[in-house]
Length: 128
Image 1: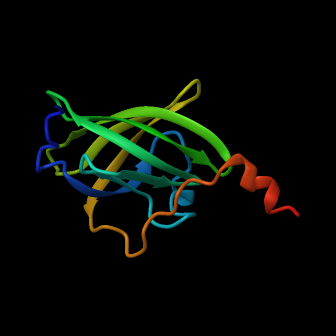
Image 2: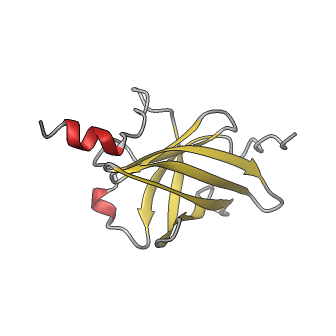
Image 3: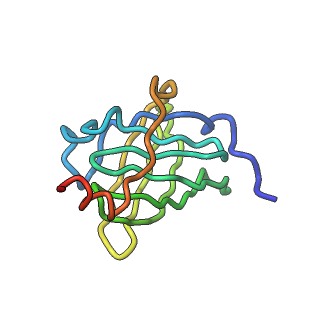
C-alpha cells in the first residue's frame, strides 16, 4: 500500500511559473493547477489536460501523468518538494520530450471540474 500524501502537500496547487514554457500561456484552458491528493488527481496547464498518479517520497511527492497536449496523447513524470516559502518547487517531464521546472502556490479546487483529455480521434471529428 502506498504511503498517504503528507498533509503539507495534499490538495490543489496553482502553477504560477515554468522555466521552459511561456508563463503567459499557462492558463489558456483555465487556471494552471495540479492536485496532489492520492485520489483521481489532475494536471492542467497550457494546452495539457492529464490524470496524475502521485505518491509520497522521502523528500516530497513524485508523480506520473497521462493525458493530451491539445489532441496529442502524451505522458510523463515529475516530482515536487516544498520550499521554505511554502511554495511547491517541482519538475515536470514529458516522456521522450522536454522537461521544465515549475513553481506552484496552494490553491482551492477549481470551480468547474477539469475535463478529461481529448482523444486524437476527436481532433478529426471537430473538422467535419
